[in-house]
Length: 296
Image (cartoon, rainbow, N blue to C red; front, side, top):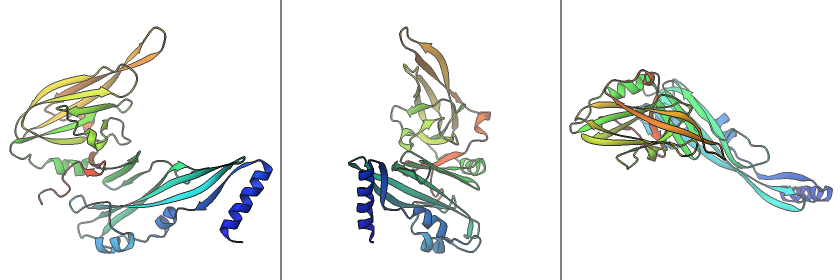
């Protein structure tokens, strides 16, 4: 019996019994592809990896990694009594490959996520990978990559271009988050930057023109948030640190419970101690958040 006749027969039996059941029409091959893809650590170079996996989504010689994405779909029909309801689930697999000084593969890891309307999901809706000095994670439709403190410091030790200054943003706490804007243009929000709400709570670096700037932060939790706004100077060649906190202000309202949060921003010349263990966001929302190939 072919698959089409089997689906029809199964549907008729289900309808006759008055039940509710799902019938898959096509299955994603993402998980199978991840399991069967072979990359030899210590032997394969970038060219061999790309012959095996394809062209990378994100790649850098300086940061020494490639990220590959594999996408496919589960499709089917859910029969609810007499009503057929379409089912779908997008499957995405991510392969993170790091390289050593000799250009050979240093290590490989993969993750798998699934999002959509399916009877039993084939994977978690988000995924994360930690591999050596790199972290990769997904959130909603976006992919993020962060570098370890060791790679972060090596990158930030480079001098700031003449006429520019550097601002490094980070959060003191992970419980609450805020949306941040610089000079009312929100360069960090382009990276999906909700400071303090990421699994790895990364730092974000911005290169601005020397001069006077303004930072605004608004809590995203609760009702009637209390924003913070601070003007600061940033001299040519300088590095300044923006430390963000979001504090619970208690409840307000007479008839209804309303949680309130307050944002606090502090600009410093010295690196806050809470920044020491935090990675640096290098990729987010489809774009580099640092230089992909510094000095080139």
